[in-house]
Image 1 (cartoon, rainbow, N blue to C red):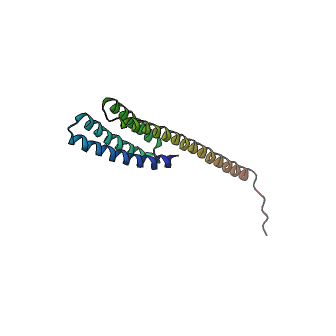
Image 2 (image 1 turned 135 degrees about the vertical axis):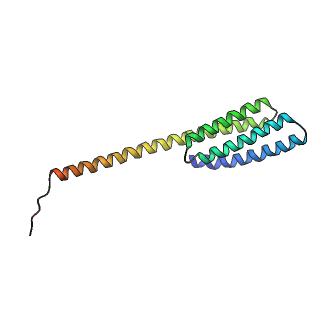
Image 3 (image 1 turned 180 degrees about the horizontal axis):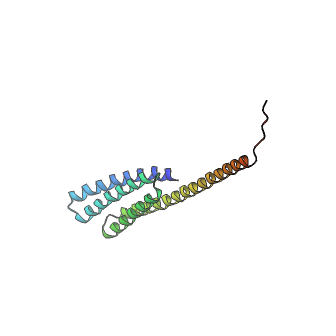
Length: 142
């Protein structure tokens, strides 16, 4: 799950970055300050999505938080401007945040399960060591 979020998140953040860069250049050419401001925020959202994607493998809970913050920022800016594509990118970012959170839960449960197995192995080894020390085998000397 986390690897899929990583790959999809990086690809979509690059697409968003290129799209908002194009909108930013065109808005400057037409002197549309509102759309230019929205495109600037779109570049920030693309950067946040890229960073969140990079954090997905090692820190999936942090990645989920960054994805959701980027999505909320995108939705707020879409509501305040004519750059309506930010609605789509906001929803996509929130969905990636939810998937990163699911990936974190899976990683967390796997770590807890592995810790329980290690503890059981240690307990068995200690019990075997105590049993061997309590009931020594008699050895005959030749």
